[in-house]
Length: 398
Image (cartoon, rainbow, N blue to C red; front, side, top):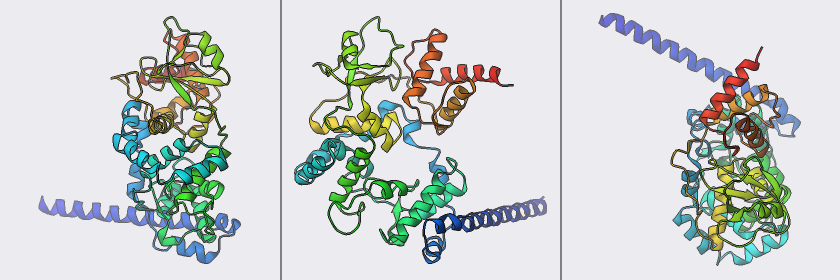
């Protein structure tokens, strides 16, 4: 028996070793295949080879894709974690020494200073949180695994361009497991598009220069459709007998329908807004504007955008969200959201992406299905609705 166990263990070790060697060869083949794309972006062979010297896949990165907080935590829990008392207090302290910087950036880009502070606070706790992972290794791991199709492959090439242009030294190119860099946590392509040398130091330093950090965040929003002077939106209360099928309207129409600001006061007389129930009709309701959508271009998550605007409001002096978050709120996982998107596409609905990101068009599709099923059409997909849509899609397939 002991001999059999030793033989079995030796065989298993050999098989595991062979698999590991094969995986290593696949990774090196992937890197070699990336060279033509890098060369097309004017990356030199020296930069390319130096970037990948000693780089191997990072198993922690693949594990991290399974536990993204925007997808696994209830929305109220997620917001509470980001809009903590400590983050609010620290942000208020930063308002004094950086008042002139915030004023200058706000004047240049037209983006609300409290939003800038909020994003800075959420992404790096105002520059305090360290960046621990090798960006090249993280992006190469994700790209070779074809996580989110070619998205991370393109980001890896963009990171090589950053190195080629001398924006940062190879050993200092540190970031998150997904390759987000610096205090605003820009992915490489965002750095190339939006990072600003506002300080005049010769390069856009989003790692150590606060003026560049805040200006780069502001430039991102400015180029993403931010409109100066327009509110992000408001928490609202919904009147009895409300027709939940309605999701988009001018503020004047919302007022006429009896929708009110939760904190009191009138809704704006002009402009349009979308009605959002991030955890269903039993939870908080919000009217959100195109500036909320601009924030979602920074991070395409309703939960993230709500955390960002709520932290900005708290820094401004507003109070907590008033309505209670549902106790039974269980958001769909990323895999379930992708499944939902694919099932909706099978049923003939237009789906804007298959990455698990819930946009307002998809919420309107969900409302239509909820109406057909006799449910409250709040546009919020849950496990029961996914099961229903899954069954309908299965009948539609040949």
